[in-house]
Length: 445
Image (tube, rainbow, N blue to C red):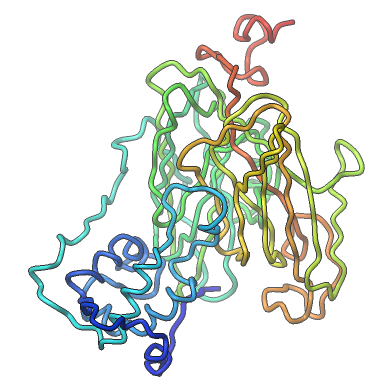
């Protein structure tokens, strides 16, 4: 389901907003507006990308001037659902400042003047290959995937054997979408048990169908990608461990373009060149469970429009948080993750006021957040299982349980962290280490 916005005949509405400050200089495309578009919009709004129109030239922007003012004022574009008032700050946040929003409004109200081309900055350019240079290992599926023209968005998992004969510490991960017109976002993980390979073999098409997850429990995570998110190395001494013989999993979220398309996306892995002391660990906050290996007791009654779900987790060791990934399905309404430290101080990690399943993903913190031992992570989310929810997959609504299918629901806060007192000295994590000589001394006890 492609969600872009077109508003016709709204010039009167814009004129009523009072954007045009008395005596203020009228913005022009070349002096102010193009800089805003370059910074926040053109990663998607250019030829061959997921957005349905370009915003590179004056003529392209002028045609959409009223629309740009409206959707940015409503915070519907750029698509960024994490609050800029609480939580974060996050890397690559697609958030316009109030000044930028006002500039677009005043420009539209003034009739979208072009201005002097000599005021314009150089046009943006985009690397067609890898941002961090040639990866140490590039993986892609053995064949491309064909996507039908019509229907709902599709999530598909591709299983990519690494062929590694020894484990590697991964310092950075990048993604190269084969067809940016239909690749909405990508999540990556790895599997050492062969579970994903069995799902792949059971599906006649390349990869296998999945919804909301990988269809199995991955052995570890490798991050994610969406338009406008740039590959960055982890801090020095920090890495993700990829065991020998593992399979990399790419969960690709596809948008349909209205015609048959094909995609052959790639993942690039950059191995650590210096000693790794700390492993990126994945933890999660979920609702209460009736037993250690049981599913959470999530049941959303039919007709409930604001059903609340909570979950908590206590941090066992002094740690630093580097990324959070909220996860719900179609009924999700809002999501809040907070940290209550042992000294009583409270910190919002992320707040999403209007959940949109189509725009979920990982939020990488601009600076790691310290979480002392004993910090309690609290999750609170609301779900709309009413007939008035246009995203509800069931009509009429039915009671919804925990699960990975379209008609099921989940409520998870994934946490990516490092442990302060960990010193791996390049040794593999215990669960992937040979028990004879690869573990740290304290892990052999």
